[in-house]
Amino acid sequence: MWRYREMLPLLPGDEPVTLGEGFTPLFHAPALGRELGLTSLYVKDESLNPTNSFKARGQSAAITRAKALGARTISVPSAGNAGNAMAAYAARAGLEAQVFLPRDAKEPFVLECRLYGARVTLVDGLITDAGRIAAEKGKPLGWYDVSTLKEPYRVEGKKTMAYELAEQLEWTWPDWIVYPTGGGVGLIGMWKAFEELEAMGLIGHERPRMISAQASGCAPIVKAFERHQESSDFFENAATVASGLRVPKPLGDFLILADLYASGGEALAATDREMLGACRQMAALEGVFAAPEGGAGLVATAKLLKQNKIRRDETVVLFNTGSGYKYLEAWNTALEH
Figure 1 (spheres, rainbow, N blue to C red):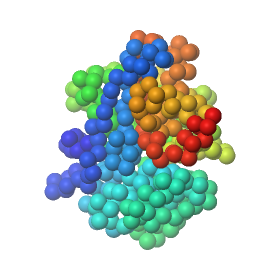
Figure 2 (cartoon, rainbow, N blue to C red):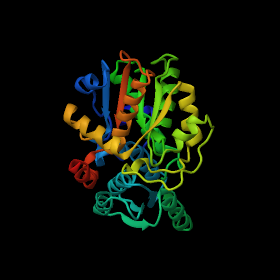
Figure 3 (cartoon, rainbow, N blue to C red):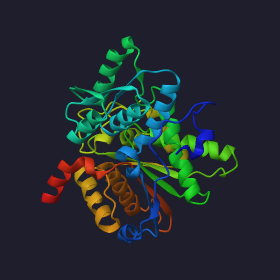
């Protein structure tokens, strides 16, 4: 990731806190494409980052700045992967980590945080409740809060996904980018990168069309998009196997929606059953063990093809944002059916 250090928040004399994140594979998926009817389907596999998700990018940038600014204790509310990444990078930086997870967080996420030496607090409710309690506890103690869009640096790390995509496609854009959307920092970051790359003269004014993929059990962006709202409403009783998509009210919802509208994009939801089925399809046809969030993106792509909104000769890049290994209990259930 730090190959783009001139475009990242690294001041003179600073050294990045890094575990080797970034430049994940982008590969053509011909078998999966044939199954869908697409000639140019690509997968950008973020599960091969440290801690097995795209969250490593944002936390590398955030912890780098936190350390440079003299922070001692880092705090984050998380559904799982962000907490794992923060705990790992805090350990790398020699900083104390405080992670706040919903009480029903999957056990691998909890154990991984603790293995990195983080103190884990389990909270009744959703990530929104974890965020509230983390802020209430940490603010009086001076903890450095790296929760989604509460600091400006996670976006900077996430934008490198678009830098890499442009470089890997020889400075062109695909027609469509399919992105699983919980907090949406990756989508927001990539849109920022489009503007930066154009300003540097590396890319023209064209933009890929963005697809936001969510879970039917927690789809605030999809609902808002269908109503053409500027922001989303709180999604009541949010529930989905895809932990990273269980964000009932993204803080940056107005930015996500503005980017979708500006790109001429789409927003679609997938049921848990559809997501897990899509993951099995990805694994069997391309050897990618995707998280359910990645499965949501594949479901969205298939639905848009059936609606003739994606043409079969267009180039589509599907982001798999995490590893299926952290969802083993879900696969046990899925394989039984």
